[in-house]
Length: 148
Picture 1 (cartoon, rainbow, N blue to C red):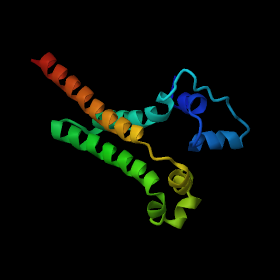
Picture 2: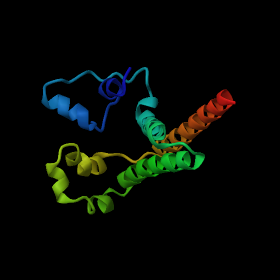
Picture 3: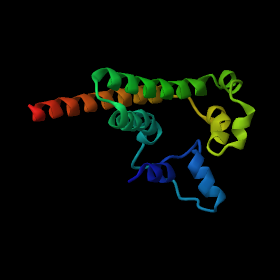
Picture 4: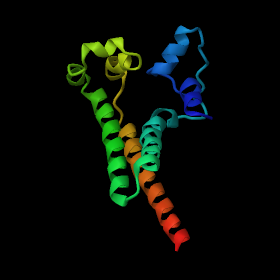
């Protein structure tokens, strides 16, 4: 299952950007949440910082300090968006009007206005960032052991 499959078939409520785009094209898949339960809500909050941290570390990281920095950056970005959903009225004041004319950015205002703050997401963001760092550290240690 890909991330797109997860969003299309397992996530109900708060229609993500690509679901809306596909719906505009006439594709409306049935949402199946019975097997995912609570995971359907918090899983993206975990997987986004986890996956993007790993990608960033794979492309840019050679040191522990850089791995910490990359994980921290993705943690803070995801935290920013989650907190923005709690204080949406404050956050949308800082979104430029010209965002509405740029594909993908056009949904920024809607993300904050329609999004829902959840403590489960904060936990997912934290665990995702920490898990990415731990995975990268384990890989780094194994690489060093293999080279000696």
